[in-house]
Length: 291
Image 1: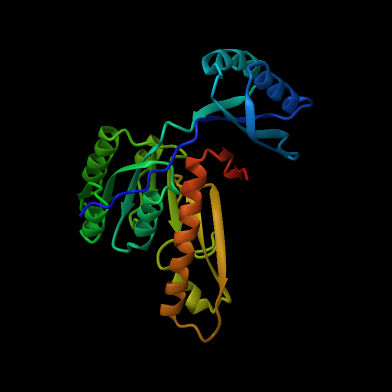
Image 2: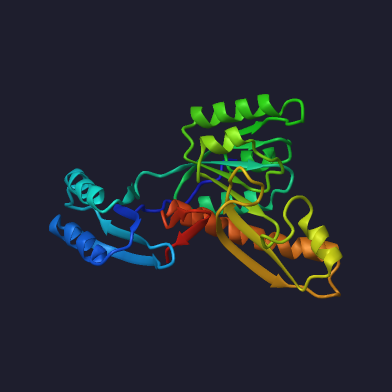
């Protein structure tokens, strides 16, 4: 039986994200331009990286009685003078998210539930997996499920099929919800800063496969999980969110895995929500995550 999602009202706002060389008066110039177009600012935040000499800003405002295209044109002139990298995102234009999963389904289940309850402002037009395990869950939430097996000999063909599906469904963001395959450089390049992964470790510790096993052998007292954007280097992309929980000598490997899965759900959902809410700016191999 199809699961009916809650009817969540999407606010009609725009969000401006800015990254540029730091200098005096940036906040005033941006705010005054918005004010001159009649913007009702709902939220504004900024950050300076003094060592890098960079300025970051996020401004959200209501679009009722606001001439967006006129503002875009005038702001483009200002941005050119100030060497700004910028973009404007519209809240009513919901991103389309593809979820990739293998055999561990806890993160997929969490994302689908949060989407159903309106916590994640997006649509999920497809789920892609190299195993059949997630099919029943996808059917429960009425999301099309595509099983594409991956082996060392079929990896290139499998990724070609996956990328074709993403294009056909006009996907904006790919979420790896414990998808246990390493993506090729060609795949990552097709979606720069638009692939979010959850790694079951507090990076940079215990990268690669079986981090809980590594942590158990090492006898750590804290285990963690990390959500990050995917780069061409394994588990080395810009970190979005991390969390930890305490363990002790009494905990066995199974206990670490159980506690870790709770962390994985939380850090992945936070990262996805912040991306969908346009709260993240990337620079170098780092992120600014606005409140």
